[in-house]
Structures are given as C-alpha cells and as structure tokens.
Length: 199
Image: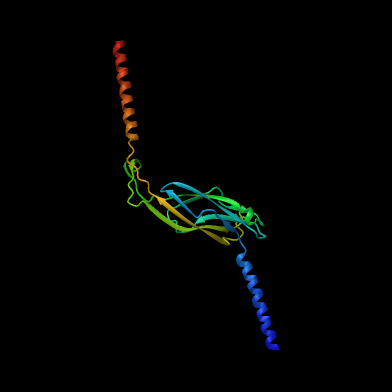
C-alpha cells in the first residue's frame, strides 16, 4: 500500500513539473507570416512584413533579424526594437516591416571607375538562399544598463531567390560628355565670332 502511494506521488510530481516546464517553454512572443519566399534582383532593396504577438502577461520588445544563411544581406528596419504589449493575441498581431538589400550574384563589367558605363553578363541566372527570419525578445530600452539580454527567439522560414538580369553597356554618360564638349566648343566659337565682328 505504501509502495502504491509513493508511486502515485511520484507520478503527480512528474505531471506538475511537466506542466510547469511546458508553460515556461511556451511563454514568449509569436510570429505570423503570409509569404515565406520572394524573388528579387541582385543588389536591390526588398521589404517584407511579418506580424508579431504577445499573449503573455509581460510586455515585450522584439527585434527582427536574418539567420546566418543570408550572408551578404544588409538588413534594416523602421524600428530597431518593436514594442509589443502584453495580452496581444494572434488576431491582433502587430505588423513589423523589415527591409534588406540583396548581394549581387554577378559582377558588373565597367569601363570607368568600376561604376560607370557597365554591362552585366549572367553566367549564373539565379541563386537561392534558404534560412530563417528570427524575431528576438530583447531587453527593455527604458532600463538604462539594466534588464536582461536577449531572452527568447522564434523564427519563420524564408527563401530568397536572387535573379541576375543581364544588360548591355550604357553609353549615355559618353553621349552626355560629348554633348558638353560640343556645347563648350560652340560657345567658344560664338564668342570668337562676336569679337571679330566687333573689331
């Protein structure tokens, strides 16, 4: 009989611990998204919107970043830290827009200063990056030097397909330069003719 009672208490204790542990693990922000892939041109700026929510009893400050799989991407956001109040449910999720600039997968062949009169060939027409958008819970900015460091993070899948778009060399700069020289020469010629007439 004693054996049965001790076993029952062990089961109850394990059950309570499991409930406490699961509630600790689940406590934290949530994220929603409508798309998990995007096709962009190399070297261009793109923006995406994810929605965050916080059903728990404590306010959160969240920061959006990309996983290390997106090497060479420059990410920037309107808000460095997004405030998400407590008891924000999934239906009332707050949209957070973040933007990134993609790396070029093909190099430009330029004649002038490695920047002007360029053409682009595309030996590789598309490159795919697969990773995650990471939403981290960060410390309260109102706590000067205090508060905790990054607490919890959640992630959403993201695939970015970068296209290389070939283009021929743009000679417009040369045409502008020739036009300027022609204009200067014409002006000098008109001034000389005017001086000769006056003489």
